[in-house]
Length: 377
Image 1 (cartoon, rainbow, N blue to C red):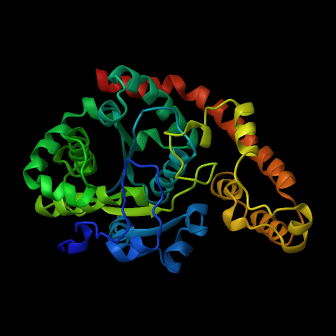
Image 2 (cartoon, rainbow, N blue to C red; image 1 turned 60 degrees about the vertical axis):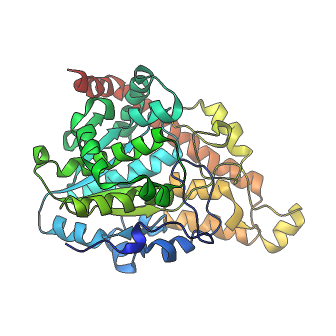
C-alpha cells in the first residue's frame, strides 16, 4: 500500500485554485487542478475501453485517482465497490443525473456493488431541512435512480441518520484529524460542516466495513469540486490500514446562465428531472448560447459553440449519437443554423427524454418508498 502523495492534503496555495465542495462558483482555471493536486488524466486506452459511455468518449469524465488498481481488482474478479450519494435537499437535476449515469455504468460494466448514501445529516446541517423532509426528498431521489437504470439488487441504499456504522466510523476517524488539517483542506468552515466532512469520510469507508467483507477497492465518482473529500479520505484510509479510495472526476457543467456550476442553489438556472415540461422549455430557450451579434455574422463565421451552454447540456445529457452530435457541431460552427432553430431542435429531443423519464419515475415511486422505509425497520 503506497503512502498518499503529500500534495493530496496540502494547504491551498495562495495563488493556486480554490476548491469549495459547498460553493456554486467555478474555479478560474480548472487545468491548474491537475498540477496543484496531482490528478491523472483519463488515458486514450481507458477511453477506448469505456467507449460505451458517452461520459468518457466526450471527455466529460476527464481525470482520476488510482482508477487502474480498481479496474485490475475488478478484472481479477475481486469484490469492488462504487460509493456515491446525494444530499436530499430537493429532486434530481441534470448534475445529479450525470453522476448517477456514471455509477450505473461502473455497476453494469464491472458488476460492482453500489453503496448509495442519502446524506440527510448533511442536508440537515447545511440546508436546515428536517430529517422527515429529507426522507420525502429521498424517495424521489431513489425513484430517479431506479428510472435511470440502477440495479437495486446490487445496491445498498442507506440514510446517513440511520446507518450507525457510518457515524461510528466518523467518531473513530475524528482521532486522525485536527482543526488545522481541516482548515488546510477546506478553509475556515463552521463546525457543522466539519462534522459533515467526518460523516462523509464514514460514508466513503463504509464499503470496507467488516460487515461488507472488509477492505476492498472503492471507486468514488465525483465532480472536480469534491476532490478535497477524496484527498482527506485517502489520507485517513492509509492511517486506518484500509485500501485507499479511488476516484473519477467529471468536469463542471455550467448552469443555464453560464455563470456557475449547475446547483440547486439557483433553481432558475438549472433543470430538474421532475420539472414541468413547459417550465423546462422556457428555461432552455433562455439558456446562454454562443450566438453572434447578428444573423448575418453567424451565417458568415459560424457560432461560438465553446460558449454555448445549451449545446453543452444537450451533448452531456440528451444526445448519445456521435454522428448526429458532430453534424450539429458542424452546422453551428459553419453558420448553417442559427441559435433559435438549433435550440428548438435540441429542446424537442430533451423534452422527449424528460417525458419518458418522468413516466418511469412515477412507476418507481412505490418501490423507492419501500427502499427508503427499509432503513426504518
